Image 1 (tube, one colour):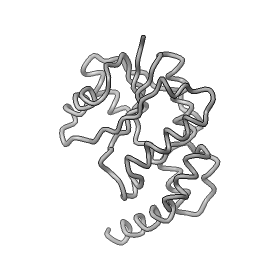
Image 2: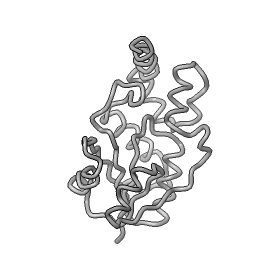
Image 3: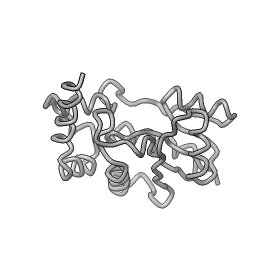
Image 4: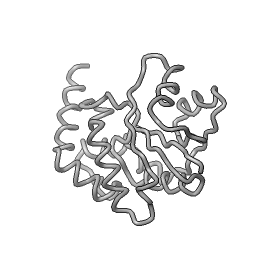
Length: 176
């Protein structure tokens, strides 16, 4: 049985992530979804907590009939201050894996340095389906809900995520 890990910050979890997970499942039997920067929250780049991101992912995957949730794990992993040791932290927190799925060039590089296979999922509509773009739209009161699963939208509404992001962004602007 083959297992992969899919690494992202999921700030927020969006339809591009769902497409990447489906891409990964065409190549592996099980998938551990690694929530990177798990310690970060209430920041303009990382507005949602690790627990909120776990809920976004779990609820969204449970609602997707094409994804077998029994074959997925969701594991938050905090950052380390030493890039070269971060991949070893991942190894300690997730079950043994055969391949890493990521579109982050630096993350891929860190695993390749250790001779671990890295595959880049095909990006779906990247100009719209990126956490950065979705957060920008939230702050600017632009349409964003069509870019995320309904379950992610519900969680963001439940926790006041748009208002939180606007407040955090406003504070960040005034600090500089």
